[in-house]
Amino acid sequence: MIKWCAFCAVYEQGSYSAAAREVERSRTTVREHVMMLEDGVGEELFVIEGRNAVPTDVGHRLYPRAKILVRQLMEFRQEAQASFDEKLESLSIYYDSMIPLSLLSAIETHCSKAYPRMRVNWLLRGRAESINDLLEGKAHLALMPVKGKTHTEREVIFTNLGMIRCGVYCSSHSPLLEYNKLRITDLKLYKQYIHEDHFNTLRNQLQVSPQYHLVSSSDLLLSLLREDGWAMLPNDFAEPLCQQGQLSQLTVDEFVHSVNYNICTFHAPASEQHPVISDVLAYIKGYAKKQLS
Image: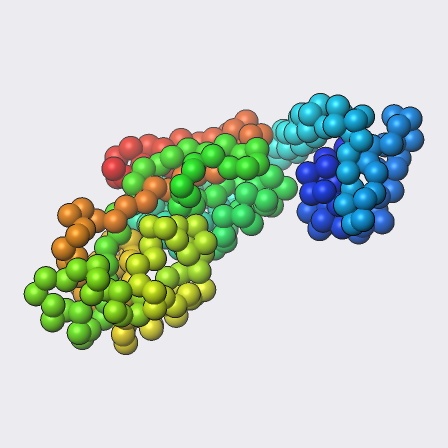
């Protein structure tokens, strides 16, 4: 399997160095695996042109089948691993900071009742790392905001859970609160805070002001927001802070409805066969039907 993975990586990345970074192996190791494959096939699969590895005619013909073979072997390995580990000692769920806390708490409550001896690990991660770790078996489920497209570039299964509503928020003493009729052009005059992960995922929906500041930490973003500027935040996340007097929600004239985005669950194909993971997925879908629009 390693030889075919190396071949596909070189074909897709266009060089041995880039393929080595993709599969997290040394360039020499990747080259050796491709050479072993070439010895078995009896033909060269790539020719080197400068720093690029250019597929030969044989390489082009083998790639589509090799890609299918690699995917099937990975799914087989994942299902085999799942069959030997029916009783999960721990469940690793990756999530994004824009996922409603009420949803995460509900999942935790369900798992505590249904599987009291199972440890649930809640790990804050970005989308790319989540997809990679799902396929490598390091994570079981991921809850992420949806990009402009819901499908992924890699073989994971997603379920669109529904819509999350966001609002525009500022500190309780912000000058923005003094506007009788606040417009987007007014927001552009003030500093906007955007979470770094959301900037990479939902930039077209979230960025308004040219004076935007990227922040990696949700806690730091809130701390900064209490002093000045504004941010688009999920209502579920921001409303308790408004009730405490820390933040205020702004009414923007052009926003007849709140700003919305969708969230999805992601999991590896083999995970559907595991009774615990399939049960948690079913619970999440049931919750989404009742609570998410």
